[in-house]
Length: 155
Image 1 (tube, rainbow, N blue to C red):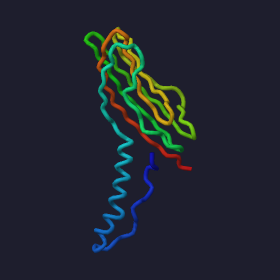
Image 2 (cartoon, rainbow, N blue to C red):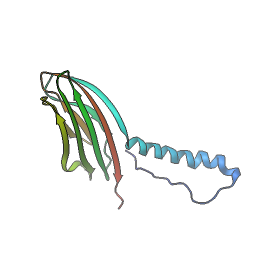
Image 3 (tube, rainbow, N blue to C red):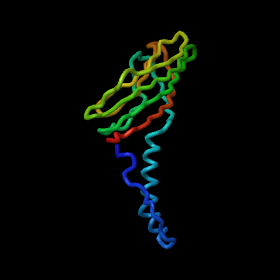
Image 4 (cartoon, rainbow, N blue to C red):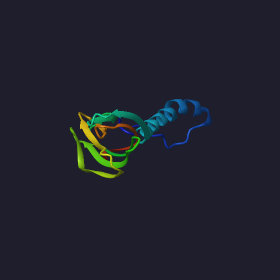
């Protein structure tokens, strides 16, 4: 992952004759950097179905976490089968000081009826995976909304 904003806009005025050149050389690259930031602070929907396996299944994989960056990840997940339903909100804080690690525990809030569904974050190499687990006898439809916030070190 690239540093968040590497080139700032100039703070000096330009002449009206220089606007096209400034737009191409400064404004558009700056807007592309902002788009990359917004792409990393996103909420995206993911849909998948697990087929009654009872094992954790990855439904989302993050980009690699760059050295010197921290990520706060929040996921809202629902699992639905004809007679079983669950909803989860999980939050976790990850960092990379040379090796990706988690700071503290994953906070999880959930509501479910008789289903035995589960969710978790998992560190795999330099990225994070969001995994879901069905009850082992149920084919479950999952939906997840994931928000990822990136924070570069400021030192």
